[in-house]
Image (cartoon, rainbow, N blue to C red; front, top):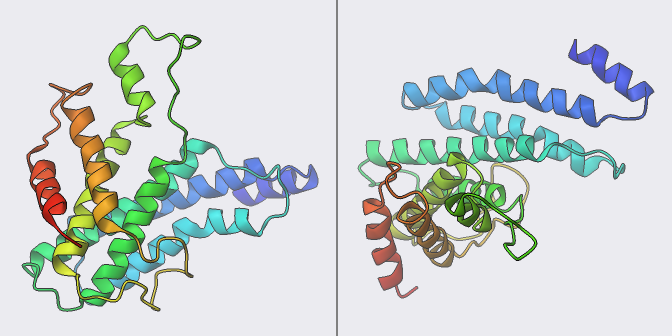
Length: 240
């Protein structure tokens, strides 16, 4: 069905619909394996390789977009966010699981650091895909709490989780990978702007936002800020 649709769209010179179907197929195909890895706590020596492969698969739509010279070839913003979220969340879960299993006495801090860099990159990019809603006299909202969230660029629960995940990964990088070279040559994909991230600044910013929205507009909705505050204290006291 997908191949037929792509052929049809190719003939009409409009491939955006085909790319959207292809992206959704990749999201569906990888979902089961991702969940199995997480549920089984990334077993075996090949689990990192499986993570790498899933990240590369979910990067394919962006690669195709980058190689296309057609300005009309686009993906729905929700699909782009989902592709970024899935990669960032998978890397977060991998790092969390491995860190806890090794009691943070990391056997391979270099590889761990690479995963953190890429995870933070994907989550930050996901958080910045949409522009925050600018509230002014021309914009009217019946729900002030919703308006405040949109003004901060929070459009879903995944955006809130991305803030916390990103903050935790920055903390792990500074706490457990401080001696690792920032620009490692062994990456999950070719060099990108995620090299040499300023984990302290990024961590403080995302966690300040997380605490602000969870204790503000989302107060009483079940979001816990205790760990975020502890990490913030560490980050703000860190002199690097």
